[in-house]
Image (cartoon, rainbow, N blue to C red; front, side, top):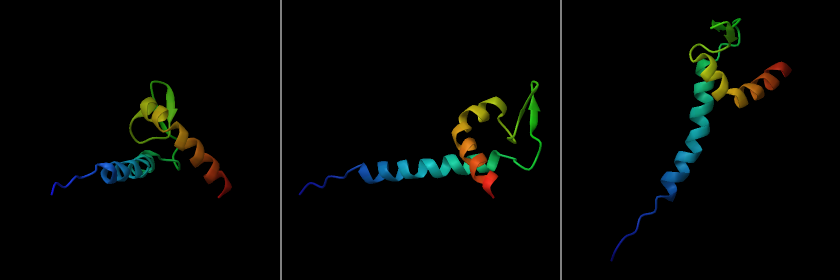
Amino acid sequence: MPTTRSAAPIFAAFLLLLPVLYSGSYFALVAPEREGFTHHGATYPYRYGGALAASVYWPLEQIDRRLRAQV
């Protein structure tokens, strides 16, 4: 009797893991208590990545700023 395996559980686990990795890497890189880091004349609140990190994490940074402003 042939057994068929589905890739759906692995795919679902991967999709659920992506937001956790994205937000975890954001919180590992952001340094909100500091003034920020200057790179080529611009100031970024990230420990590493500069403009690239600012563009990648822009949506999560907007949520973070709204939530931390209320605290």
